[in-house]
Amino acid sequence: MIEVRFQRGLYLPEPDLWLDPWDAKPRAFVSHAHADHFARHESVLCSEVTAALLRSRFRLAENRIEALAFQVPLVRNGFRLRMLPAGHIPGSAMLHVTRIADNASLLYTGDFKTRRSRTTEAVNFLTADTLVMETTFGLPGYEFPSPMEVEAEVLRFVHDGFADGETPVLLAYSLGKAQEALALLEEHAIPALLHPAAAAMTRACRGAGVPGLPEPVEFDGHAPPGHVVIAPPHAVRTDLLKGLKSKRTAMLSGWAMQPGAKYRYRVDAMIPFSDHADYPGLMECIQRVRPRRILTVHGFAGEFAADLRSRQMDAWCATGGDQLELPIQRPAHRQAASRMPWQKRVVCPLADFSDLCRLVAETGSRVAKARFIASYLGGLVCDETLRIAVLWLTGDAFPPPAAKRTPLLNSATLRHALVSIPGARDERYRAICLSHKDLSRSARLVLQELQLQPEMLDLTGAAAFILDFHQTAGSMERIQRLSTRLATLHPSEGETLIKLLTGSLQLGIDAPLVAEALVSAFHADPSELVRANQINGNTGATAVLARHRRLADARPPDAITPHQPIAKRPDLTAELPFPSSP
Image 1 (cartoon, rainbow, N blue to C red):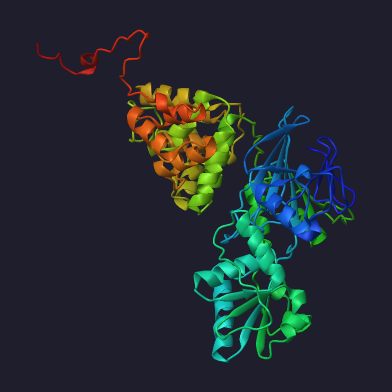
Image 2 (spheres, rainbow, N blue to C red):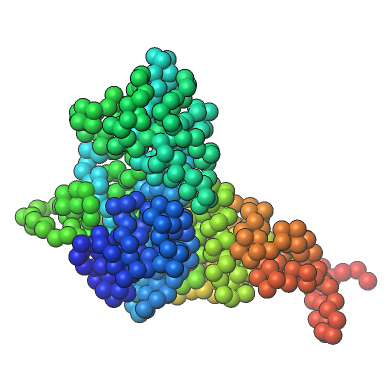
């Protein structure tokens, strides 16, 4: 396990890195730009959007910021660091840490949210040995209504205020919830006026590339009829808002779930509009990360850790002070569930590609999908890996002219291959398939219950296996090859391989989006890239030319290159079932 210490903040001694510490440190990871997570560290590691917000909000010098794109690995002091979207506020990031020597891993969530939003990147979890998670709403009673219900409550509050001739005032933090509320109102064509603090942060978010935000209009103490005012909670007691003679206030906060909250905050309404995960969201995080050890911070950290221990999980409050409970005999089925094998994930190129696929699939924004793909492709150092990745992203398991859209794997072959792995049971596979109609997802759930031996595999090796599988004639031999291969892959990588073999990565992207990502990754001219791809008919080859800024060198597949020998063309008639006529 990677060592974690708590000293007025979390500290990882081996990579010498602090995680959202309270005081200024030599080198720290800052998960997002809220003031309670920031101090003037000598060196700040953060996401690109957070870097822009820190410069705007705290005037942090450029030379003290190390901005890193999501999913782009950074190797330092024997550790591999990667940032993942946290879904909390614009730019919020989780940090995934892997010790290269033994692949021990840790995921630090910072503040996160599992629900989708309009102004933040969708959260993306990766499996890890240790999970350090925030537990602001770590009690079972904190289960928020559905997003549709929450948004309907906001709009109902606004329209009721309009109907009564009052100005609706939404109290929300100036960074995060203010922009999310503004995007909701903009979507429904409701004009909004922003408190100067919220307006400043909205301009900073727009400058950082956050989508869905209109140009902010500042509130100057006067609100025309039919306008909503968005202001931070403390502003309700200032002269600026006191000047509104007829207003109706609503606090946007997860604490709305507490009884009597509106009387405590002295507002007319409390709406559970939160940028944190609720209790089910915390449990979803654990289910998706599948850690062996859990450390809790913030909010109901001790209570949530005790709750997890009652479920037979190794969970402790990161600040200490846990009270040990008496052991309780658990039902047999609960004990069996806790013994599910842990799958050690190997750091390898196929794992990186699998993480990209999961991130893109969970992201609804087309712009965000292109940005994630561009970051991934721009970080590849091998031309062959780039070529294969682009071909797979555009839906081809093989390069042209051998590319085939027909699936290479059917459900019967996959079932026989899975149940051939030691420990797999046919009845368990059938039970999972009945609950999950998706073939690749069902396979991953089956693989998660098996004792596998994951090995490192790059994209070249995976492509070679796919080609070998395609050329294997006998069904029994195909089953044996696939079974052997899946037993040496982490379930996530096994799922990716199955998706490639069945003909769909299910990412919600198309060739133009991949081309857009290539233009961004290699600063290529869009028209030159389209022209080169039309000439050579191979998006993977076009990507390699774009990397080396040689799009003008594109040639048709059968073109003759000066001063190079002409390869002998294969005898195509040899593949015909009957001799060709003379």
